[in-house]
Length: 372
Image (cartoon, rainbow, N blue to C red; front, side):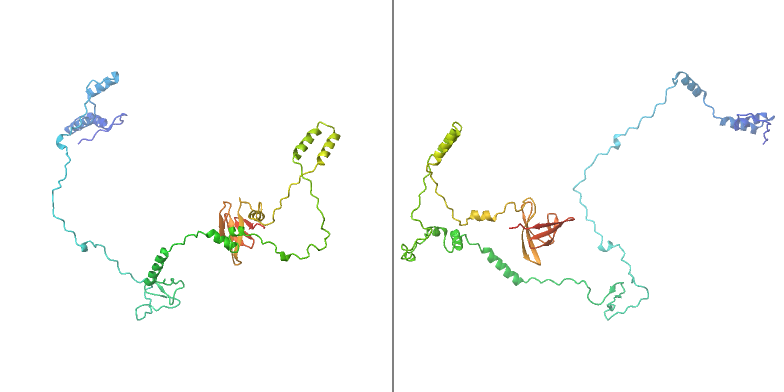
């Protein structure tokens, strides 16, 4: 192979292929190897076809392609031979039952390994004849790592409840059946009369209305009553007051009208003449001082003693160590309370003889019974 002649200076802008072609042409005696190299270099050049270059230039000038563009391939048509028609399973097919596997073949889990003692290796245990550790009050640990104490634990279970006795239950059921057949007695017809006799000393109101006071016996009057000397209060005769005129109101009205028309002197004379006429005095009605239900209720009722819109203490009962109170709420409902119960959004802290104290938030409120 002939070495290429090195040129002193290479023109700028030439590729490696161009330089190889120029070097081959400069040789004076070309050989077959040089011709083959030139042919390979020219073949390696990528020159665009003349037709494509001319079409590209024409499109750049006028914007129209001279040749028809290539048509894209149409999608393939799916034939009916590949169509699958849904089928219905046959129900008349019968096959033999498949034998189930043995139960032993299902137990595929491996058993747990032997659990070693959680205690320290080499520990010695004091075992009794049963193979258990001997318990102590302070506690002894067994091979399983559990502390064993001697004696009963502090929290013990409750005692076993009494078992029901079938005979006692039969007696109770019999008593219940007897009580179920019992019915209360009907209300007596003379219940009101019995209540009246119990409160009125064995007599009813009708019997008391028929009673009349006994007349004064003649033996109680002294025999010489008429011959006794008269006292200072005794009078021989009493003056009968003059009766009041029937038209007294008309006369007074007429006198008042005449006062506006006549002189004061004549009016005074007319009134004096009227007043000098005999007057009719109405009889005085004396009401007995026997207490009635209305008078007793009036005397026992105190006006505005409690405010019905607030909580009021009605009464206190019970022993000093177990006081209870009856309270009327603002809603009108009555409630029995004791120390510790909830009332009006607070808690009862103390109950005295005539008062109740309860704590409502940070305030201490006191309820007192009405005076009376």
